[in-house]
Image (cartoon, rainbow, N blue to C red; front, top):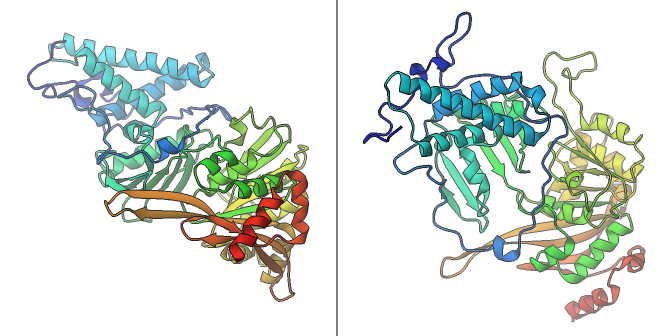
Amino acid sequence: MNADPNPQADRPSLDRLALFRATPGGDSTAGAGRVRSSFRLNPVGARPEIRLVVSEAELFDPVPEAVLPPTVTPGFSIDWKLVAAFRGKAAEALTQRLGQATSREAQQELGRAIITELLDAAADEAVTAGRPTWTRAEQAGLAQAVFDSLFRLGRLQPLVDDDRVENIIILGHDRVWLELVDGTLIPGPAVADSDEELIEFISFLASREGSARSFSEAHPSLDLRLADGSRLSATNWVTSTPSIVIRRHRLVDVTLDDLVRLGTLTPVMATFLRAAVKAELSIVVAGAQGAGKTTLLRALCNEIDPLEQLATFEDPHELFLDELRDRHAVVHAFEARHGSGEIGADGRPAGEFGLDMALPVSQRKNVARQIVGEVRGPEAWLMIKAMESGSGSLSTTHAASAADAMDKLVTCCMEAGRHVSSELAARKLGRAIDLVVHIRLDNTTDVDGTRHRRRAVSEIVAVGQGEVDLGYAITTVFSPVPNAPASPTLLPDHLRMLARHGFDIDTFHAQATGARR
């Protein structure tokens, strides 16, 4: 077990371990760790509870010039092909013994024991054959790498664990960029030894999650919610290289008051939005990618009475309201399930469960609000149905302004089918939506080169029924202000009732009058 001068020269390798040699009647597992398994990490619905509140100081701390994963042992580099092969063997053994462990914690404890058994067996075999093997520190490092690969994110894990990283952008196994919280883009370490290994691992991630999504030539795009709450979007076979982005959700258990402290909202704006939620108005949050729409939507949802029963509709899960149990006692969290195999008589792949199928199911569960997390296409029609059938629905969409959000939603509604005309969509939206809240992301650089990233609500408009040709009308309640949250402008008469729900209407009028002077 002693270290030699060349620690990697004669370590156990795939072709020298009996564990990974071809077995009679079976395939060899020596091929770059391509071991497939039917192992499913989580029983359906079993997810770790997530609680994360990031302070302003943590969000905007200076970041180092580089973010690199820690080394396991000086002079020792992980053989990731060996890790992949051990992961396959461990997954296989875990599947066979899964009846002994039903909870996530029990599965991980059993997994650690299996990994230890496999590595001990490999080390004993090397000693018996008179070959050098790992030191204790090296074996511990390899065991952790196998565990991370089996239960977590393998070589991606150190990057996801780094709170200074907001987005991980992968354009091939060795072309990795890290977008930090201040907007800085820096190169990151390779996350696999080849594109094939990277795709194999992403496919493994997709197969082990509770929703068991497919990532293959037949399904070249993947949206996946990871165990820590991060969102993974992967594409291959239709892009020149594997294209993967992991977006970390830094603010999960967040309130409107938290966003006031971060400078995203003004105090009077927070009282307005809080009152709008309590008054059961239907709200759409709009903004560019990465502007903070989902974070703002969570903060709005956290103003809902804790005992109010909710249903959420997402693809994939991002709101996590069902995991904030102190804030929401009853949440029926629906997630779209992508089908596979042949198309059935109903025109859907076998096993598909779309959000349009979930909405009628939720209406038998006595929920007070139906929340459609993100609207990107035909689910806009679903959003309208949720707003029409419940009180105070909330959603998000990508748009450059509040007015653009309404135009986009009309187009999205028309994607639901030929039966939806632009006139019908506009008329329905004018009746269903009460407010559109637009959030903006600003990146600035000081003269000394220091970068700053700030998110601010830049506009709030009230929506109502309009002329026949347009179908809806909008009134600006809070107007855009450069490099700051929006300023009070005009309060429509029908929104004066928000004062009964805590809206600071006197301050609103005072600030609006001051702005006009």
